[in-house]
Length: 451
Image (tube, rainbow, N blue to C red; front, side):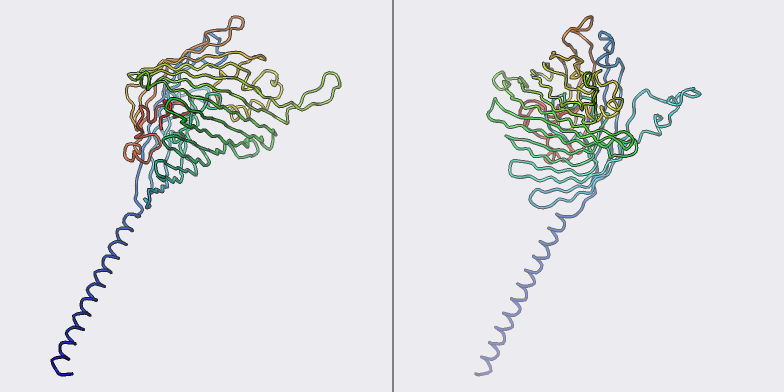
């Protein structure tokens, strides 16, 4: 091989080596660039959220001598700021760790100076004692095609609930007096189906503290454009305290059908929801003395059954909702029959979290009717304002009924996270009229098929 050939071969080898090195360097830079982008996309971010709730409820039940509910005015404001560590993963997955506090004020309740009654000087009712609850929880959210999967663990706000629960399970004001869940919640929502399951620790057994837990669930399937079916249910278990024992079970189940006539009527809402309300109630520690034998007899289980129908109509943000119930007493252990069993009134607040009107105070089936007229001047996925008037009617008995009282209510709810991250909220950004329509109540399902 001559000198020119050697020089040419060396030049070619050098060129090939340089090109390969440059290509390898380019590939390496691209690899590091993509890795850096992935790391930036998966970086932990510091975030925040603010919730504000205002709730006004003027109750007037003098027409029924305050038997069903006390005449009083409830005026509550709650401000809930929280700090969030947020981790956005690929494939629409988001992780959050939240830490916050509830600042709650029963407006108008302030200490009375030089009062003879200790309760009037309680420092917890002063403005400096507004910090009622600290909450902290983990939240997992994932987009699954057209659906959204959510999971919460820890002390998390009750406002995350999306189920349509009968008032026999949850009263309207539970969201204000018990704003947080201590446990876990799993949710799934899609255009045709939604469901949720929650386990809530109500109390851990102590010397006087009652041990109790509650699981509840709801679901709804949109079978067609105008028809759907669903359920809501709950089971509560109370084991009493060390000083006072009890062994109580309460299960309530509400299967229902929904008919949506709003598209045909070209209205915001026009629906009928109808179903059964059946429960199982048993306290194995309640003992009665048999009048004939004189022997102690354990109280038998109770299976009260009723039917419930809800009719709703709404247009121009003005609506009517009428709830009718006919059936047996859904709160058996509040009956006078158990007045001598003094521990019953201790666990009743844990056991019965529904509206007082399902405590019929009768041994035979009776009816109860609730009629609400409301106006919602503001309603978005993150802000809602609602004013309403509610009338209550029951089966007449003596001088009581059918009209027993009324409520004048107003509420305002603001959620900053639903505004900043609408696609990660179950209720915000939906293609319905509501979004978070009923968050001032015990549920947030809103108009029929609001998915």
